[in-house]
Image (cartoon, helix red, strand yellow):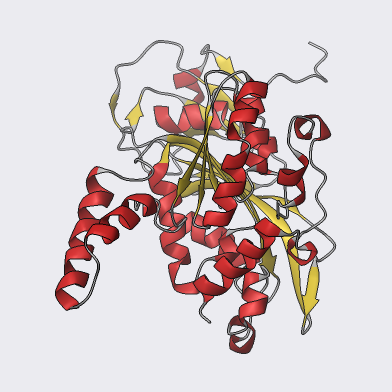
Length: 372
């Protein structure tokens, strides 16, 4: 049995009868579980709670949505202007999630949850449309296989399951480890593709603390059980950084391993990150001061910020550091006199003279301990 078949079979069983071996203990927000049917709660399998990162108005994409539990929790948080999309490849899990869709829409006073059939490592390919195409064009030979590839390419381009730059937050709960090893980088690249500039991820998954030997990777039972397909912890962070994400962060790391196999610890983590903006870098004379406590830090774009120094930054970086996830770590200073924007050409690591920003507006997170 290959990885895909093992995963499909294991989670089809999980849709029909609860599988305790697929669960990690998770402290979910009880207030968000009250509206959910018990069957959805019982037949959900995860290792974290990415719903905690959902904000009002978000368009949320849940990868490997399973029973729909996290989707229905997120739907309570996004509000009337938000939307939640769940993607799963397993028909039994999709049927379970959709079984309560009308009931949940009534409880939520709006149908803001949608479930789509697809592979999370290929978010452009709509598997329902492919099933329909194959019913009319069964593949019987090499020419038929070629026609299928042509159709898939056209469908990915013109009718993608999830469009480019359309999602505010991608979440996932213990699913990335189920994707084949050779497809993991494609998976991360697809997450980057569908996110809007400035979009976020909150990925809860199982990671290993050491490389996983090949004989464990070849064990279908361990793979479908969220073990042998796990990212190594550093490898997971590097994969998102290499794909272009900023502020890749190990936001949660369970001290106690979920399982230990042959001395390798497998634990739950939650990784957060942000897709950077693709707007041009313009210099309008702004500067940021890194508050500390470290002597110097570097961001994911190669900028260096020595503690206490007024560092020249472009407008895009200024806004990210003073409004984004690091706003508590930086002081932003605008020039005293408004300057005409010019294309950024200042080398990274350039200090902005105090004379250029003296008297400018200071932008920083509120300090509750301040006495002034």
